[in-house]
Length: 128
Image (cartoon, rainbow, N blue to C red):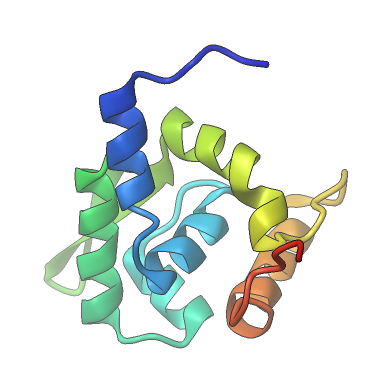
């Protein structure tokens, strides 16, 4: 068993899991840095809504902005999961029925997560 998380960090992090889109986006971000635009495309969601939820995740301490870059007169932001997000997903992966990532390449793992996020997430597998 690992080190206990401070209760305020734990409470804030778990609050970030309060919306399905945030959970789906976080799952995709487990594979590394990405932008809200890339997440919106992968999830088939509106960019504005996706960006809003990514900012919410940052407020909960689950993601952090790693860099920005100019794109078509705007500034694209890129985010990655924080150690808190990885820790919480480690404990919740079975409950959410996340696919087994194994030793496959990053692209293949991301593809599996996209499939999970778009098809297999309507109900979490909960032991009866």
